[in-house]
Length: 280
Image (cartoon, rainbow, N blue to C red; front, side):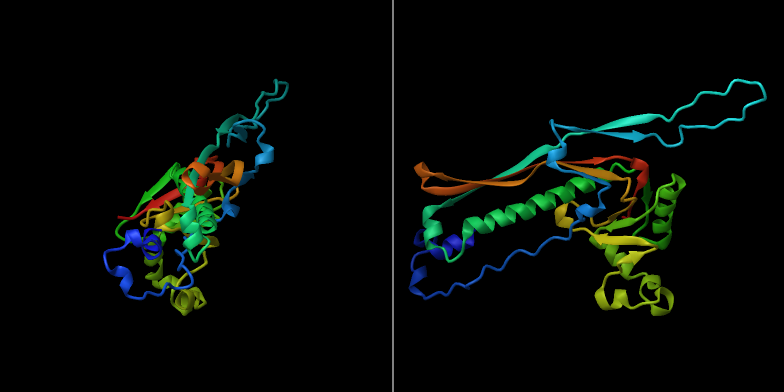
């Protein structure tokens, strides 16, 4: 906004600056949108109406805790039951306040407050993406690769999940890992992959049955990291308050203002349903 103010307010310019005619472009060139993990990849989404209090309990069966045993003739049948664990998800409050002077609103060629509200909404989405990455960092399985990702790294990550009976459905990659994939001939050459998707789009959407999702470095993702996970088991998103915009005025300062808030949490449910792969 500083460069906009320089165009609109003589006090922000240098002496003699406004003697030269200047033309302001009719449209602000917006910041590009980030590559984010879709909310559809969460195993569970809990909306505000389903959270009566300040937190939400998720009950999980503990895998491999129920056993059937051989019973001898005439012997008592042994007792066994499935074990359970409980995870508490507590959404936190996130927000930002926006203030625009009346002079800026009167003089600007753009709807500044409305644009900033939209931008705040996008930043909330980027924050959620960062929370998802933080949750995935709790993976029970990790692989440390070399300078570049290899097919063996990816398939070993899949095996970690399959060893625990989970299904590797999703592969989230940082930008450097994505570049490594582009340089693996198995995913590029037609006679090996059977299509020209990587050559034509620069991105292969499915690898070994997993949906490949690239995530922006500027939205919480480390460029040298990637995650294999089971979208039906890995993490949940709890939203106590959806993104909420409240507009108000500050007469004493001659300003229009708004607050944008959200109460959100991302919780890892099953760490064995995630494998983190890193390169150097």
